[in-house]
Length: 197
Image (cartoon, rainbow, N blue to C red; front, side, top):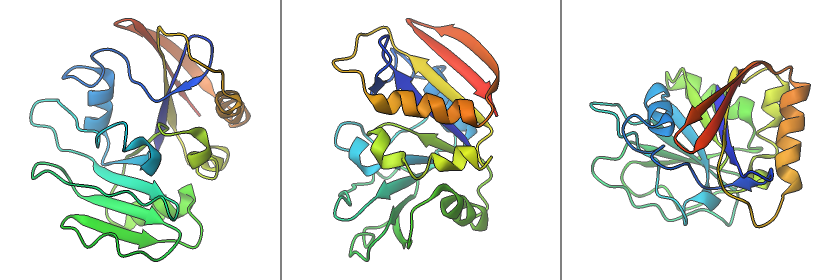
């Protein structure tokens, strides 16, 4: 299990990705290709389409959408898109669309989601923290439970409108989990920080 998020220069969480990161050869496109599934917040979907790797002949990751009721999104799949699973905490009629499965959990947490992925034969999962830290607060506790191996932080060359305390909380969780082997890289105008737990 790996996770990634973006920060602005002044330390705020950002929903944006760096220039060319989603194109073939970009770090985000390659990350998607390297993973069997990607976990997303339903709150990120109105602003961003379902992510897709642009690498040649790449298999697309399974999209796992976290949707706390009543925030279950309407998702339209293209023919080339991979399967979508919506994890929610209440019964819903969503999921009747072709290629969309709905899984109702008593409590949405990282361990339960990863166990579901394991039963489906998925080995590598990426948690993409776009959509707001609050959507992932319970999920990120899995970092402290040693369920996460690697993280990627993209520092964007922009000044955020407001500095969220949530970004500081994400960094504190990483520190408590025993972050090591931090490696900075320059990718276009952004800086990527990669580390392991």
